[in-house]
Image (cartoon, rainbow over all chains, first blue to last red):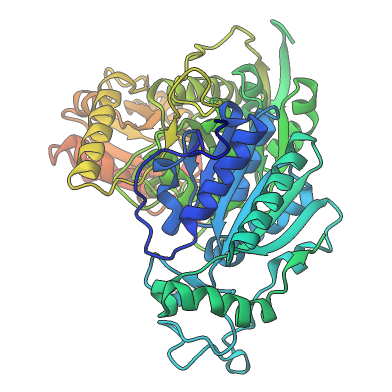
Length: 243
Length: 353
């Protein structure tokens, strides 16, 4: 019988440290499936973020470096410029990419660095205990917004980084996706594949945002978390191709 | 450029030395008084198929260097004092990940924005780690344009051999000043094998570059490894220069440009029969402790710095309380004059210390 589905080669067969219902494990798998399908494992170099996914190199079977918090796009720039034949991608959370690393992200995009960014947006700082992220929804309760994020109270509006990047001429591809259902998971994979293919074809800066659940710090069950993305989160962060 | 002398600023000499040492990646951000370095690379890198990037910040620049170094390439950044403060995060990560890199600090007056005059106010920052965590970087302090060139080549070699950052520490005076330079094109000691580099996991297990150690005891084990490496460097890589110090009664300890000014003062003092000499640390980390203890024995010591007294602490530690140590320092972009040094030494004779 023909084997039509198996564990991705690029994904190490171990149990992850992620919380039940967390999106990281699934997104790791999708990235690895794409890398396998494109046959690029031996020339892929990843940049792991500071945040819950810093240990991604325990699960990925390709070269990986850590980067300081927020600096992944600068590290990726250095790695790619000195070996343009390699495939370089960063895997970053919202705090990493859209708060402390905003400058590095915007300027790598503006230079048109030929790299791929997987932006995992769960609207919260998971590793440090559920503090407000730049992407936290208005009204959302977190450890540092106990009454709910109040944009009128100088706590900031949910930051839409993809929409900000869309105005930059050197950006090749921006798409926002969410992992909430089998159908949407396939869509996330399609978008990730496009972002990697763009790099192979030298098209320039490509970023896929994946809205991903954090049941632990959303204080919701895994099932409720997925519903909350579909019913609430995507009102603030509409899905689809932005550029 | 083979075998002929050319006129260059210290900043340009450092940049050309990097090219000769095989550095093909530079990222930096504008700040005075080191702007000649990025401008030189902007022109020169394309000629050697290298990469020049004007980064959006010092943070980005040092992290681009991190990326290029992680790929196994020789990479460099440069800045001046306030910018070097910003790079400290990256220098700590480079140290924690055991990545080689060369960082140039063309020091200016501080603290804060300070001014753009020459200074040696960053000695503590450079030699005691600078960023967070228990680490050192190799720090080399030239006092001429030729030496700036030669030490920059050495810095790349040392960084590769020991897998750690190395810094060229000069003041704005040396960065800006022109002198004849012999550009040596002989290849430096290239460490060609970097099996740890991120080049793609082809026919090998994946390489991981990290500074995170969560398992019990793992981080202490890593720190012990670093300290062992530092001890070995302290044994093997000390550099210093002596000038007329065999018979001297007053020994000046000074580095960089003030050391050069001290040479003039020493020659003048000797004309009037006062026997002065110089001990010039060239490697500031590792500091030439044992050699200074030897040379400084039974001598009156004067430390001359363009700071309010930073290297003097290492001098006193080296001498271990056995000599009285006097200090002459200027700050805020001011330079100690030969006359000031002469007057200070004459005063020391008068006090008969």
